[in-house]
Image (cartoon, rainbow, N blue to C red; front, side, top):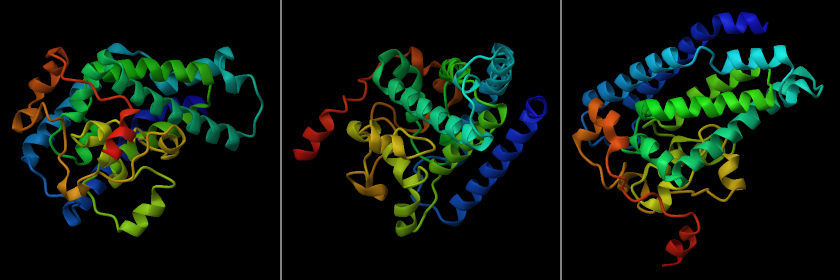
Length: 283
């Protein structure tokens, strides 16, 4: 089964990717949450252009991706799940949850460590927020993220099916929660108990430091609540908040070349420490 998953991985993931991307794009047209401030065509050309660059970089840099690493770990008997015996369904569920927690902490560290923030700020420099924002990551960040992911897979030793489910969920929920799509507020309130919603994650893309230093989850919403980084709503409301980084605004943020060189530009102040949040709330 692992070999079959490995052989068909690209087709399966591409099918889900295109299906969710198209569905979210149509939802954004039918029921937008906010009015976009920038040219959608220009932004989409830049954000989808970076996807092409990242795909080429991944194929040239890594002979083995996460699912291949899981097959390799199983063959060598490496990793936690190759040392314990669990029912198949429980192993898959536990692996997906643990991998998602690893992504939460990776994301949080990318906000804390200045060198990592240099790379990650390209994602936050998008001056609008829609489904393509979920795909906007610098190639160096994608490379570093893959190294971290490979390490997590080797340490955990999950089944290939678990890694495939995790990859599809992570990619799909990222496009969902970056969507400029309107949900009924009651539905959002209940849904965010199970998955990160667009209104929950949009707070993370505010120009306000204590807001973009919160709500780090991409898939499961529990980690932000558990580890004290959850913020329910933006201070100015979803219609009144400004998206992006205050140091970088305007159409230039959608330029592909500008995005690629951004990590090498002077570092604007990093996000404030989480402990400042309580002080800001009281002021």
